[in-house]
Length: 447
Image (cartoon, rainbow, N blue to C red; front, side, top):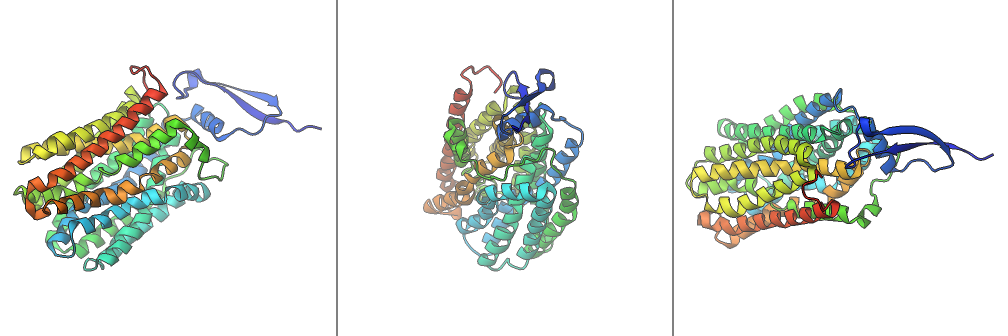
């Protein structure tokens, strides 16, 4: 007696974004094997609610993003205080700040396995706990670079990586037509967090101490992040246990996206890490430098929402390409000429929006190309390629700055680092352009 299995036939029209009105689902009797991950993704996307409890997921994820993105992008304020205190050089301290987001990349594929094993809620709870604990412990490590590497770098870095995989993959399962908007709102939380945290850090450093600044931020992270993490849950978990899908590397589109992300991350943290030091080099105060970082993060929040909306309007690949072009041109054409506050504000607004747009559009691109149930695996693999840029992007800029005279040599010493960062963004934009062309050669088409 042969064994028969139930399979699902799905008819999809259009761009690969399933919609209820264009989806036909009917049971067939056959001896076919169980559906693959690709078929499971199509089936899950065909019944996506586009709202409902998804909005709870979005706003809970935004709160978590407020803290792990906000503290990472406010490192420039901490870095300046440590440099002024004589602890170490900007290039060395950039490694500390870069180690936290680097953990996102190094641990991405392992975190994808964790979220499949224990679920989004427990992954997020563990992530927030480690994030806040590392910050509190860093309050006892402000006089020792090695201890800062271990606390804010490693402990908070592991927590950050767990938080990132949750907020990058869970909201995607609840949205199809509004996926870009949902991801934009989630990552806008990080931009708002960066703006609020950078200003708060400057005030706390002046009013208390650097040690208590770390402790207070850590305790606030735990008090608000843990309840938000408890609200998270998956809509469409998959049965597969594999956390690396090697066959994706045989897909040219995946390889182009992987390479573009790997290059694009090198310049991402250069502006927020070095804006306070650059502001000082043109005669601005420490408060002005912190305000510029806050403005950068606030612009990032608007960019995440705006480019998230553009994902839904013009297509995620178009939105990602736009964000990288704006990032590159602003670092090549505006920042090097910003010798006064006005042009520097213009740079902060444009580059901040483009910078935030990268993070809002990338999960949408991955979800669009590979489906919602495979997004954790595909996103984990893509993000793994970001390790080099996260760890070395800021320090390379710091070493270039040192080679041309260092932070005390004036604003001209910063220009080679700016050109390095801008060129990397444009190189990544070129790869995304090739990916767009390979996906569909009709440039007016929404892709």
